[in-house]
Length: 284
Image (tube, rainbow, N blue to C red; front, side, top):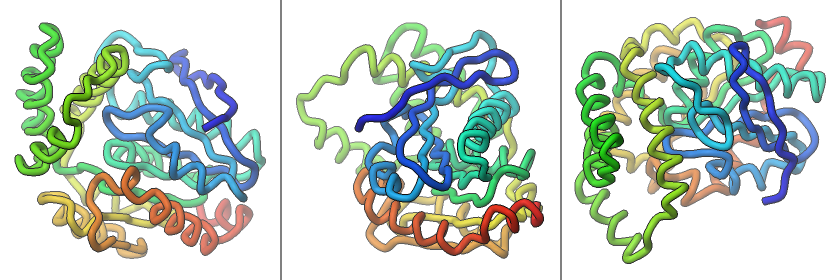
């Protein structure tokens, strides 16, 4: 997928690489853990007709900077606000903000902190249950495995964070067959996961804090995703009662990869129903 890669500087000087595609109303797509510039690529291709799509690589994920120190959602919110401001300046319009998995949690934090330039919010399965004190020992396990470059132990710690059922883990491994991951890409992903776990360990599982989000909101989920995600999404839907809630039959947490057209169509329909920029600014 061709595009225009550029740098955006966050408030603390962190350099974020952002891929920009298409022309029209700005859409910022925020990737989840283990992702990067490529994560939303196929969905983005379906949105470029009528939308200017911004794909940032979050801090901790190359080619963006990997700052020293412990990462927090506060720092990442500042990063995302810098990207949103760049998109707003480019188009003169507030943005549609979209996040998946960890990126959806970050999108919630950002919308709650500074909704002014966010025209709408669409989030897919944020792991709001994976936060706080119970993540700390898993972070410690992961960091120890990371430092000794033990990929199997890192994967085991991450499975305990994400709670992916053993049969799904086995199916993914079987599907990979004898393919060996690119070592550079695997290390980049491992570094990113480490920093994401740091932020999750400092976060809260309190879903009620999102109740004051007032921008037009779309909640997306797959009917086949494992618990506790369905219960979490149902609780979030009750917390943001004005949100539209769509559950896709036959889909799971991997829908952005397995059914990108389905995701893009849902986003386009949602964006089309959102009030225009001038009204969105009055509402915020």
